[in-house]
Image 1 (cartoon, one colour):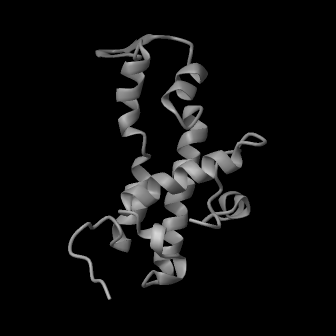
Image 2: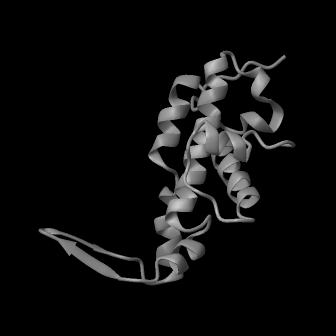
Length: 139
């Protein structure tokens, strides 16, 4: 993946994403792009946006990356350690009959980070067919 698939201008003016702290954009964009590429079975390792079948597929991929960037902004970072540090407040809370406890160790935080993909990413990617890992056509 040479050039970024999404630039900050698209994120701000087309997606209307949350504000990204100064200097954090390249890190967030790179991590979000890698997460989306992983979900797409490495499609963008050997292809570019022009290889997508529909123009709307490109918009959906860009929006998926933007949603993941916004997720990182909202969660306080790319890694479980960054998120844990940014949310160092309450360790447990209860609302009515619902109770939630924050992971207490780095290992617990890493396990919690396994689900570190915004649900909107899958919704954006689903119509593109890039989530499908079935038979590939080579040649």
